[in-house]
Image (cartoon, rainbow, N blue to C red; front, side, top):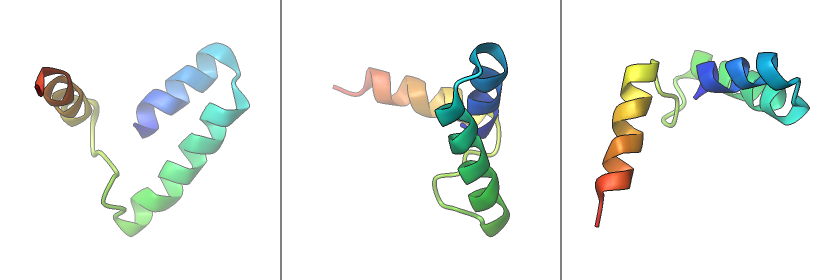
Length: 53
């Protein structure tokens, strides 16, 4: 999620995505339970949610 918000910010300049990036960066250091370590895990979670009945 952190990588996505940074990429979105760099492409659009959206301030809210930058704030999300900073928030996720802060939680990442503390081991926040919703912090996804990399894009592959994020994609897996997203696909799992889409395939749920």
